[in-house]
Image 1 (cartoon, one colour):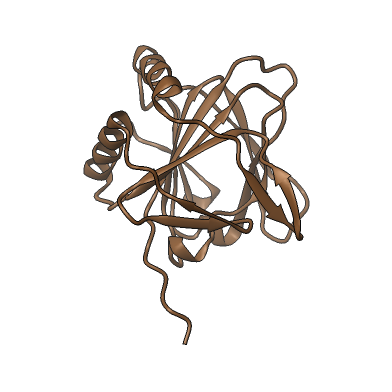
Image 2 (cartoon, rainbow, N blue to C red):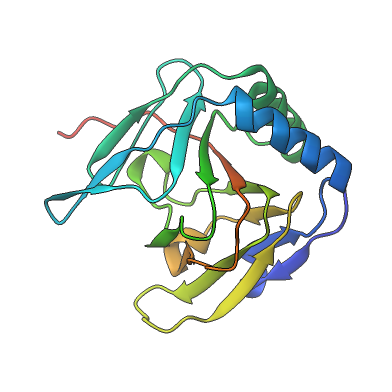
Length: 199
């Protein structure tokens, strides 16, 4: 595994070419047809919105994930996703048990500003994000700020390793890009913890 570029004072480890182009393209084509993509809805400030991308949620049995007023129940692993998760666990020593899959059909599909800081992820989650397909821009800003701090282009086969502490201090987004005509798949592998009962 190549040495990562260390960004955000070490909170973001970036592997620009984790996969060779041929590997990335084969994986992209496989997942494009293997994953049961759906367009979901979320509730924001009490109003329902259609998510501007297609999604799927896979993981170990019983895994659930709640964000923006919507609870996702994990579908069983597809063969390819399960192999990928096992490989990443061996590579990192983590116990990743779920993956959120996003399909951006073109540059009109996007993701707004957010941090992956839901309770199920624990206090300081570490999240691995693999990009396949069209190159898209990953935007960053500090929490509490409305000013964008930087842009990181994510090529096919690249991996972001978001370290503990990043979600506490930073937000990220995937802005629209009208010039992009091709799809992009993003896989964010994570560890989901059982929620503690409220006493």
